Length: 188
Image (spheres, rainbow, N blue to C red):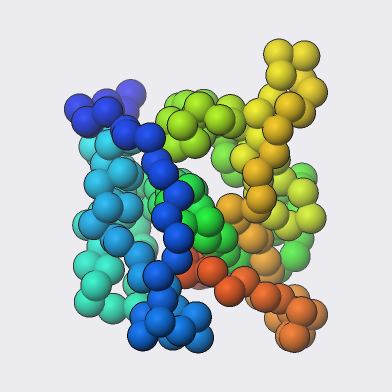
């Protein structure tokens, strides 16, 4: 059984306007990574799983993370994506090799660890209590006790497949995307 880290209380996350490098959107926006990692650590994730705040994010643009399965790499990077959306309104991307891997049937349990551990209400200041996957996007939702949808956010995570790269040309536009998770990239 995983033990949770003793973490400081997660403060309410306030949305900040995007500040661009050199004042121009073409140069990308500034992310306060120490603040994002502080918020992540305040979630109280188990200490024995991968902690993305250990990534030297200021030193490189690309990271290849490999380990045994079930160490929390993907889950904890998705938590970072959620924090980026809350703090900056930034959508992140999650990519797999084929379109069959990102169907609703395959993605139906993808967020279970996040949902079951109560991270959505923590991250969203109690505004939402779940997520919804539709049209290759994840949104935050607030489900009523009867299962009806009371509220829904804009997408925080776009989901794509490498084998559909030709389809995305000129149509995929994610101007605030600053985190791309290419998951399970090693295959037989």
